Amino acid sequence: MAKMQGGCLCGAVRYEIDGEPFAMGACHCRDCLYVSGGAPANVMILPRAAVTITKGAPRAFTNKSARGNDVSRSFCAHCGTPLFSETAAQPQFLAVKAGGLDDPGQFKPIANIWVSSAQPWAHIDPGLARFDKNPM
Image 1 (tube, rainbow, N blue to C red):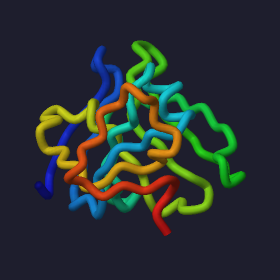
Image 2: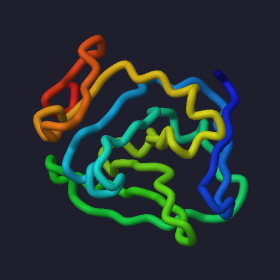
Image 3: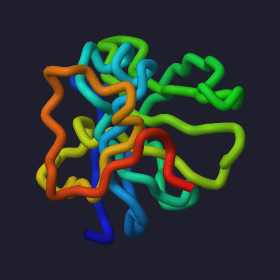
């Protein structure tokens, strides 16, 4: 899975990934529910250096996390597709949203985080690790 590509729905933003994610999972925190429209954020965590934007420039919205850190969520300014998220506390990492991958089947979650915020109707795979908040 070393090379992957992705982008937004309208094609204005494109990116390439050259590297292996070290974690893949679903975040059920309230902020992720807001920006996804109700679903958890399905993300692959990669070293920032492994992701290159090859076309366009995403726009970002930054707010404070539950721990008080700045979290920026990037999206296409034209079509609104969520693309990335990052935290000021760990700038060396980038979370790539699985829905933007050209082949989203490459996403294989290993855990669910912030299940304490998951909605009662959310399906949480009992075969995956689960954390009430962020894992340490």
